[in-house]
Amino acid sequence: MTQTSIPDIPPAEGHQRVQQGALLVDVREPNEYAELHAEGARLLPLSELESRFGELPKDRPLVMICRSGARSARAGEYLRAQGYSDVVNLAGGTMAWAEAGLPTEQGDQ
Image 1: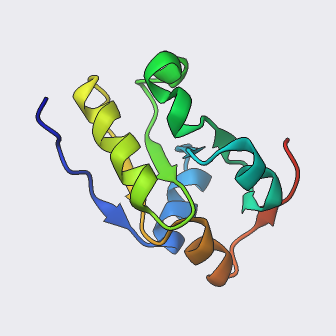
Image 2: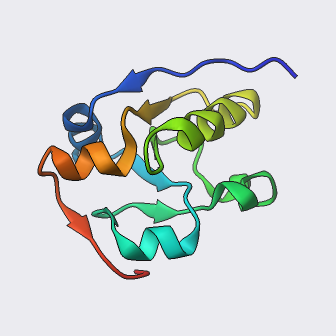
């Protein structure tokens, strides 16, 4: 399977896209997500992506996020291969999001 690389965007742009209607998808595991996640992020662990990716809308932009940006890039490439066209990766992940002072939450909301 050929992987299509997806664009990396900085946290501020990711936040702006979410405010404009993009879905922020966190691909970390539930325990990581509960510790700290970007406000409004939807949890879909990478370990479950292949069986659950159909839950994600194809008609809405997706911003993929993980801890540092590596797993979310792989998840985004997988989604591109499944026909999702508007997918970007948040460079630096949740750590960069928090360092940029963007809103975060704790718990498993």
